[in-house]
Length: 107
Image (cartoon, rainbow, N blue to C red):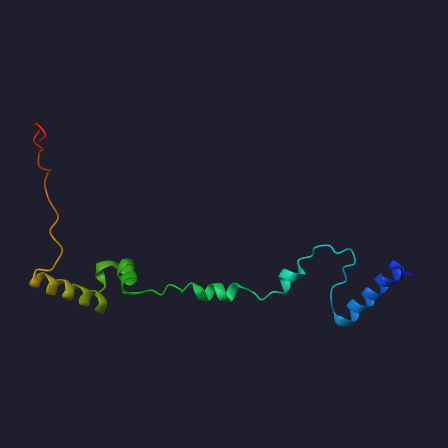
């Protein structure tokens, strides 16, 4: 003999009250599975580092009126000067129009 549905529903209701769960006898999708998950906001925010204002940003904002010292930029310029002194720098860019191509027979 089977148990009537009304009695099973009453049992489910009592069970949900005791264990503090959601009573959903029709099985409707409610999104509680998603809402129970941990929030992803802090993890996503930690993945992308926050932009901190640097010396270049200060120079861009205040212009040449403010005297600043950028140690990394100075080191970079010193390194380039050392390369130039040894002849290891980048070649100069070509200036002027391109040379005309001679038209003639192909060999």
